[in-house]
Image 1 (spheres, rainbow, N blue to C red):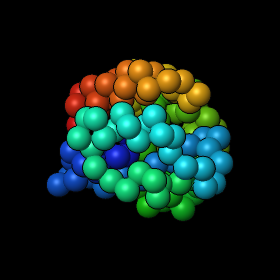
Image 2 (cartoon, helix red, strand yellow):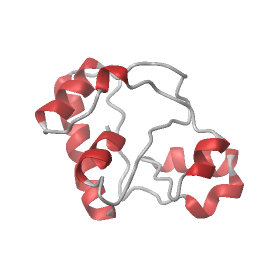
Image 3 (spheres, rainbow, N blue to C red):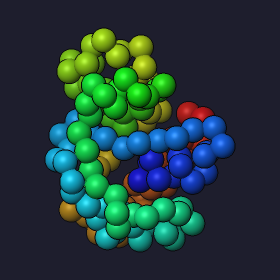
Length: 120
C-alpha cells in the first residue's frame, strides 16, 4: 500500500516499488488492501500487483529504501549491509494488517499516509 500511495500522490518526485523481507514471490494484494486504497482515491492496477522479496537488484535500483518497521530495517541491514546508506527508517512502525479485516487495512493505510507525509 505504501508503494501505491507514493506512486499516486508523489509521482512527480518518486517512483516506488514494493518488496518484503519475507515476501513470497507472486502473491496478490489482498482484497481489503485494494478496497482501502480505492476508498482513499489511490489509483493503480492492484489486481495485477504481486509481491516480491527484497533483492540486491532492487536495492541497487533504489535511491532510497524505506522499511516500514524497525524489524524490517534490521533484517535488511543484516542481509544487505552494503546498501545500509540507502535505508531510511519509517517514522513509526506500521503494523501488518495481514489476515485482518477491512478496518485493519484502513487503519494501516492511514498510518502509512501520515508517515509518508512526514517522510516526504
